[in-house]
Image (cartoon, rainbow, N blue to C red; front, side, top):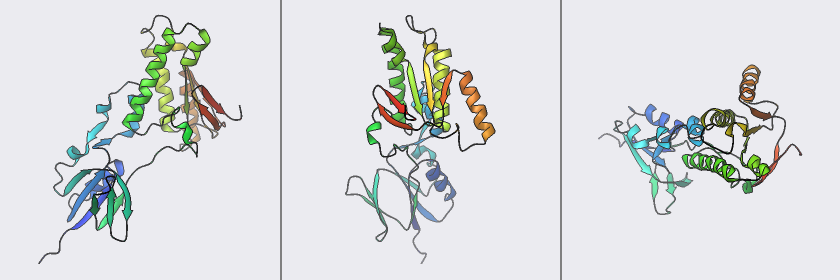
Amino acid sequence: MPSPQKHVVIIGGGFGGIAAARALKRAPVRLTIVDRRNHHLFQPLLYQVATAALNPSDIASPIRRIVRRQRNAYVILGEATSIDTRRKIVRLADNESEVAYDYLIVATGATHSYFGHDEWIEPAPGLKTLEDAVEIRRRVLVAYEAAEREVDASEVANWMTFVIIGAGPTGVEMAGALAEISRRVLERDFRKIDPGRARIILIEAGPRVLPAMSPESSASARRQLERLGVEVITNSPVTAIDDRGVTHGGA
């Protein structure tokens, strides 16, 4: 009598989880993918959703569609809250559902860090989910609309100042995209303000942008950003954030 198939549970339907599922396509196992969202997200393009260049649906694909031809794969929409390694179960957020496993793959991805300053979350949202991207897009577009209505020149300047913290790939792409839409996309959409005069400021605590890349690539990226009008500030860690501004480098 053949032994029952082993059950493999994958927590997370991102790049790691989907790659693991595909690698097990022909394996003699049952496979369950658990994710709190029903879509796989192409995170590298989130900045384009945040700057209104793409719609959310352009970078999100249903997980069920991705694995629909994989006969050994099953998908559960649910949020894993804990793992009992002794009993080999994953508990879901409703506190009633449990998913048993023989083998477990945890592919929950990464999130941004506020370095212990959770009070920064509201004034400075991260960019890891579609919800983040849509909220940032809303704030950017509302800022231009508020500037158009404003009569005080200093307040116009405030509304048209955008600060990006962190000069990794996402920060660099976001800063460049904000500069491009202000200089090339929105220039004819307003009557009172000149979107091309918006200040785009990129702040990095380390000595250069794109620190994971070569010094040559980093220097090239900085030159390109500055040609777009982005103000790049390095060696300047952020120490405070609120609704009115950012304090960095002891300033």
